[in-house]
Structure formats: C-alpha cells, structure tokens
View 1: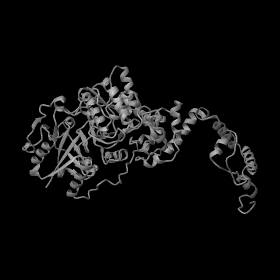
View 2: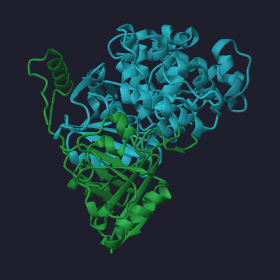
View 3: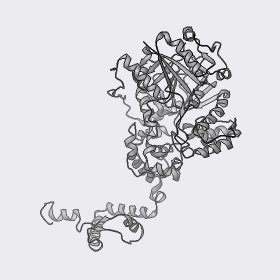
View 4: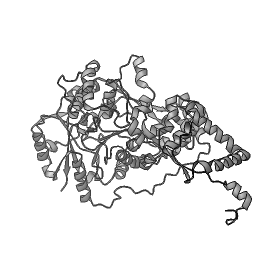
Length: 378
Length: 217
C-alpha cells in the first residue's frame, strides 16, 4: 500500500528493475494492469472468470505461465499463483515489504498477513527493504497486545490472522543478511500538525470503514484515486497530498465531499477516528484553498456569497427577514412550501424537499418590540 | 544481531524529527491508559487453557492431535503415514525420540539446506516457543527445535509439537513471555486467502496443511 503511495513500482521499472507483487490480489491487479479497489482485498472488483483470463493472458509474460486448462475455481487460481510465485520467491535476491507496526522500545518491525507471501519476502531473499510510514511506530512492546487483537478482528473478523512475522534487525543464519528500514513522511508530519486531522494517522488499515460505507459500496475503491479508498482514504489522501498548504487536484479535492456524513465509519472504527468530523474540517480546507467557485457549481457559490453578505450586516439581515416574512404569506398557506417551479437551485431543491414558511415576524423584531416578555406581542 | 542506526547527522532523519517536534509545540509525555481488560485475565486453569487452544486451532482447519508424552513418536509416525509424507526436514534441535517411530527419510538442516533442496521436501517437524489458547496461535522463535524461519515455510506440511505447559491464555500473556530480539513467527492455522470473490481458500504460499500435536497427560 505504502509502495503504491510513493509509486515505487513505476520508479523501479524506469530504473530497469522488475518488481513483482506477491499478494494474490495485488498480483491480479498488476498482471491486469489495473488499480487496487480495496485495502484488504484489492481485486474485489474482478470476478473469477476475469481473474482466470488475466492469469492465462499475462502470467507467461511475467514468469511461469498459467496451466492451459486453468479453471476459474478459486482453489485452482490460488494454486496457479502459488506455482507462479514460488519460482520467483526462490530466485529473488531482494524483497521490499511494508509493515503493520513497529516498536520504538525494541526496534521490532512486524507484518500481519494471511497468505504467506509476506513470510516468503521477509525470509528468503538476501536483502530486505521495508518501507513504512512513520505513523506505524508504537512506543512499547506491550502496546502490541492491543493492536494484535484489534487488527485481525476488525479486518477479517478472525481471532487472529494466519501469519504474523516480527523481526528486530537481522538474525545470523536466519533470513536476510541485510535489512534496510525506510521511514516515510510524505505528508504525514503535515497531517500531524493539524489538531483535527491528525487522528487519521491512527488508522491501522483494517478496512472496516470501507465495508460499511454506503458511498464506497456504490462507487468502488478506484473512484478515490489513491491506494487508500473509502472513508479513511477520503480523510487521509487530501491531507497527505497537502490540502492544508496548497490546492490539490480536483479528484483529491472532491474526496471530503464523498460522504453523506452518516457516521457508520466512525461507529466501526477500532481506533475511534471521527471520520465525519475530519471530513467537515477538510471541506473547510478545500474551500479555503480552492474557493467555492472552483469546487462547486456557481449557483451554490452565488448563494453562499449572498448569504455571507446578508449575515455580515444587521441592516441587510433585517431587510431579508422582512422580505422573507412577506413572501411567506403568498407562497405557503399550509405552513410549508412544497414543490414549486422556481428557477435554478431553489426549484431543484424544492422538487425533493419541503421548506417551512419563514416566520411573519423575525425573532429579532419580536425581541425589539417586547423586550423578551413571553406573553406580549404574540 | 547487527544493526547500524541511521546516523545522527542524516538530513532526512533530522527533517522528519524536526517536523514531528514542530507538530507538537507543547510536547507533553503521553500517558497510555492501561485499565483496559486484558483478554483471558488469568482465570482459566491449565487444563481449560489447553482445551481451549485445541478447540481454537481446529477452527482454523488445522488438524489437532492430542497425545500423552509417551505416545508422541507413534503419533508423529502415524500422522506422517496418513498424509503420505516421505521426506521430512527437521531442525537440528528436535529430540531424536520424537522420530524414533517415523519410517520416513529424515533430513537435518545441518549444514543448512539450499532453498531448492528445502522446497523439495514434503514436510517439516518443529516444536514451538509458546502457544496462545484464546486465538489458537502457535509462536515460533527460531529456537533449537524450530530452526530458521524458512524451514516452516517452504514444505507443504507443517507438524508442530506443542507441550501443554507452553500454552498461555491470551495474546498479552504471550507477549510478556516472548523475546522481541528473536525472529518471531505467529501461526494461526494454514495459510489462506479470500482474494477471489471473498471465497476462502486454505493454502497459498505457506504450508497448506498444519498439524498441531498437543502433548499432555
């Protein structure tokens, strides 16, 4: 995930180095020249027949070809991947891994996985390079007693994932002879500087928020334009890309709006990231960086500008209140304004929503004439 | 163990550390609340812990065999025969009495086998450092009866001997007893994937068959 964030494979390809993904889903994505769509199951957008076709078409060009009679049974597809990758695992001299956690107190790094591709990469090649975001570091060995129980349960609903590897430097005669740890900032300290936004760095990449998100369910992961899809991606990606300091591309700027703010993500988050709170906070940053006009249709920008001007002046507000009260007498005799063919945004709004008729007399006018005496002037 | 810390004058390191310091102008030490419930909590007896471990490992579709201390070598031999395993690799520290009944080719990892030779074996037999009842996990720490990590990775069958007194209640108990300086591998069932249509397949790159032999009275 983090290597996708820094587009490492592209950089390696430009340097003439063949880098092969070893997670089954990542392999499907790579061989299909595709983009991942989920944190935990990146090829969730492909069905078994598509995967079989990708394997038949592309495995031969990358190494051991798929069997010609390959079926679309998941078991057969997993077996094809096993044989294809086994050859690479036994030959590879260098592996690059990510990490789920690292412990400051002991210098231990760890990878949590299911398939065993992680163990292969961490154990067989001569040289191991681990690239890890700085937010993965926990202070103490003991902290793992929390995270090792939180992550699998929130991620795959297992009591424990099949394999977890932990290592502290190199061990003579066991595993790689050289280990390089790359601690990555790439926007994380910027994110850390924002008291509201920094909670996004608590994420342990369990993907529980994706699985409950109504927006993710409709759009799929690739709509988020980053290795981090779903609600967590919507708050992490804009921050990593620097929304607090400068304008960002249009897709990234749209991410904080990719939410109905229903809060389901906050409910399931095992590390209590208040994703709706950060989304709203980031909407403010998008507006500050881009202005309304760039971000949203000009109707809304105009409306917001008008409202801004009205609320800035008590005199204009009073005039608007008088006008609204007067208009209310004509448009909504039943106490509400229903479907009404008004022009522009107002008409579109009223097609689906009712508005309450504005009060004939504003609160401020009532207060002025009665001094707040409950019974008077009703 | 050799590790060379990033040098103090390294500009990238200094830049990141400076940025972290700037992010918290009023740095205060963080107090981690520890009043949370630690799973297990040490209320179960030794017998209950081992029973729970056996039950939880079996739920991962590992094969669980329980045996008394004197039946271990026969149990191992029977399991090898049942799985039609012919070539068994063992770490150097595996006791000879575990193997006294096994009618298979025994391959010792001394001197260390090449990866290709290791890949050509059928099975590996190891002990473990510790096992966790709550999560059905065995933990290897590359001790003498477990060997280097590749041994329990390349063969398609892993037979792991767990003594009853090695089973602890929960994850916190295990962490308290493990040495972080050793390479640790936590194993909870055979390797698995759900990457294709969320359909679970046991057995991808690690051993596809895990047999846990629990030795107790």
